[in-house]
Length: 169
Image 1 (cartoon, one colour):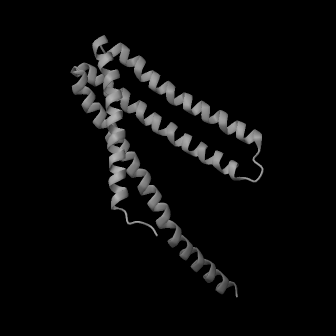
Image 2 (cartoon, helix red, strand yellow):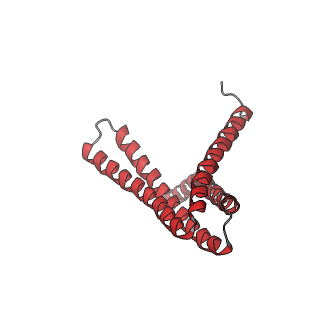
Image 3 (cartoon, one colour):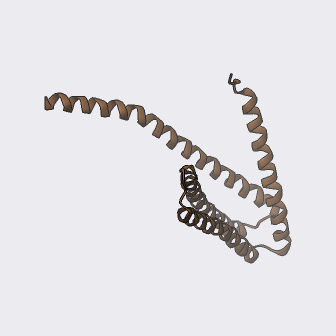
């Protein structure tokens, strides 16, 4: 009797794991893909910025590691914000959300967003030391144009993907 129960339990676990594993694997692959995409965007930004600001080799050697490090830190903060937003949504789904739990999550989100802003300020403070005044002005123009073009390209890609996707009935 115990042997049959053990076999049934084992088979159940095997079936469950075979059903769950692909979903977990798919989420991992999606996360890895997003990380690679973000890294590619940062690399593209740095390459274009080098040309637009006419950076020297010395400036490039200082800026690349700085921006790469800060962007990795910002990715971690963004992941934390995503988790915090998920927790906030879960609390809001409850029939009677706990106000104190909401206050804690709101404060935590505000702190994380401030942490993100401080990373951007850290980059700008370092760039003030590394870049000339003309390059600083070019940097402000470059960042505005780069992210505007990035948003436009992403929107265009979404529209193309939306048109290619079959319509749901």
